[in-house]
Length: 233
Image (tube, rainbow, N blue to C red; front, side):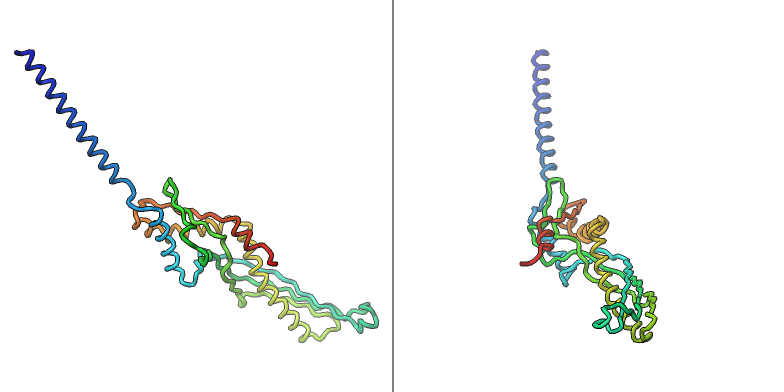
């Protein structure tokens, strides 16, 4: 009888432990299921595109500013009766040197952005593919412009100087945009600034979707960049 009692006790104990283990496994599996994301990649894509379109009604999202300076020298030489003396008698060269500071804004053109350009990776990173970071506008600081003009020895000082100065100022404004585009092409910082701006803008939206700690990365599409730079027919 004592033997049977001990055996029964062991069987009951084993059964109880089995039941407790099964219950714990079910509970753990339920918690694991509850931790799985309750959203899809489509939800992430729609949230990203909708937010960017809402925040940028003009279809351009400004993500950074760039201080730039253009130095231009414009020269004009006149000759005495060049049709007879074959430009052998110079009336002098009027030269104007202009230093023009300015600021450029750059960012992302969103007109071609679609849900296909947004990817939610397996390691919970939101990757946005763009054609590139481009210059949106250039604002010259004309009040801070420096102009130095030298008038040729036989030239009419006021008229000649003003003409060359105007040409130099126009050339400097064009050079500002060229310098801004060149900076975007040689520096990685504008892309990093764009990534940081998109991270700050999209984090609240992605958290609302269900991503606890969203990470945003920007990827440049080489094919799109090559298409934009390709010469027309």
